[in-house]
Image (cartoon, rainbow, N blue to C red; front, side):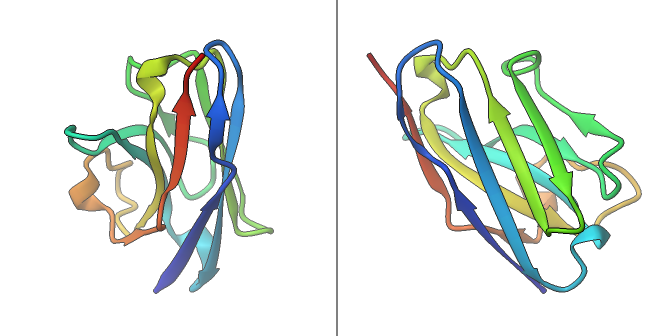
Length: 125
């Protein structure tokens, strides 16, 4: 198993940047593909970024592509979500997640086995 803890959420203004971190403990971090998801009130949980075990492959949906980046440091068991040019529509609880599925980079929440507790990001003027 792997335990995940997110940090770095908060209240920012439109156009600002914010960096979220996910720290993992437990089994070997580099055995897991990792993802960032978000969920706004009344909406389904959606992916905002994913990164392969090595960090060489990433995925971003059109809604955040060009604004969000994901990186990981396997030596430190951490993953980072850098969010730029934030919009009010980015307001949500953000979760990091891990999956033992490594044949491909999963995009659906149902394919992720382990989840953090979430951190709130609010974009408002």
